Image (tube, rainbow, N blue to C red):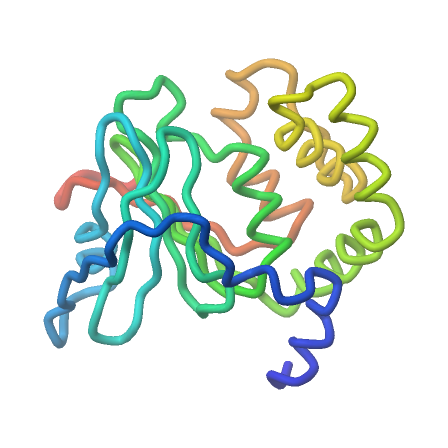
Amino acid sequence: MDPEAYDRLYAFNGVVGDYLENDAPWQEIRIRPGLAEDAVYRLLPCAGDFEYGGYLTKTRIRFIKCDPSSARMPQSKASTFHSHPTGSATADLPSAGDVFQFLNFRYLRAITVGSTRLWVWDKTKATLPIVRKFGAWNDAIMLKEVHRLEKTFPHNWHEPLAKLALSNLGLDWPKKLKDWQENWPAMLRQVLKIKVRVISRNPGVDRP
């Protein structure tokens, strides 16, 4: 898809994608020429009790320190990343919000750094009809659902909203954490047509 068509596809989320509330200073890590892809991703920063967010270019990783349970990054960049707090029991699992944001924003690749794993998501041509359906739901229903959920979950409506949006796309969030642990890569591939790769953070260890 050419860039103009891709921009039209994402017209539903306006220009909010690059807005950053966080005013922490940007930091950089240089990417050595010729470094293997897995090795580049292992350079991505993480911490025990807060998240980092940022993006990658051909020569740099640029990132900022974020909050204990959320991270923001320029969403229009082609390749973005965030880390999960490695001290969390669910550090090696994507959240519903992670999946929601991947569909909601324009980036083509998202990398997440967990405790022992990292995972790479790519949009493909097969993902685009899913994004189109997501955008139609966003335009028609999302604001109404936000207002409804705020009454029940005044301080934590984001995750229920994400699960509701994903259910509309055919991905019903498992009630048991174990089911999500065992099945999430296959669910994202089969239902949302996202290309998923899971990589060990430790070189030389077999990939999950």
